[in-house]
Length: 172
Image 1: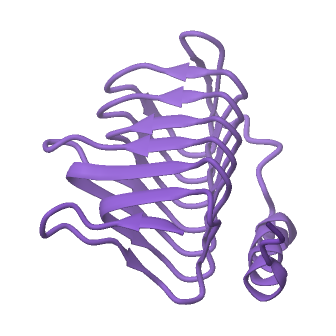
Image 2: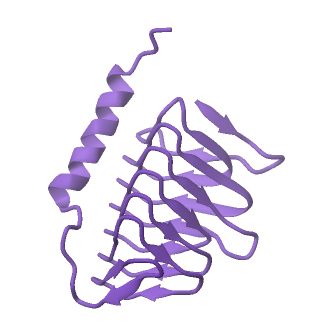
C-alpha cells in the first residue's frame, strides 16, 4: 500500500477498511470502518483534511483532494464512481457520485443525492437532499432521486472489500 505521512500529517485508517495496494493515501486522511479505496485512487490531504465515513467506496482512478480552507468530507454509505474528482466538497450520507463526475470546492451534496456520470458540480453549488445533478454544468432536479445504491448495493461493496482483504495476493 502507498500510505504516506507528510510531515506530522498521518492517515488514520480503520482496520476494517480496504485500501488497494495501488491506491495512494497521503497526509491528513481519515477512512472509516468498512470503507474501500480501489486501484489508482488518490486521496491527498496535504493542506487540509479528507474524511471518508463508514461503508463508503472510492472506486478506481478517483482523485480526492482538499484545500487548507475547505476540507473534503464524504459521508457514510456513499459510492464514489470510477474516475471521479472531488475537491474541497462536503458529500453527505447515502450519495452516489457517478463515474467521471467532478465536484468542486465549497460544494455541498445533500443526503441521498445523485451526481450523474460525467456531471460538473461547480464551486459553491448546493445539491439538495434527494436531488439529481446532471450535465455540464449540472442542472438540479429536486426530489428526483433514483438509482442510488440501496442497502444491498452498499453491502455488496463492503462485502467485496472484505473479500479483497482476505483473498487478494500479488503474484509478481
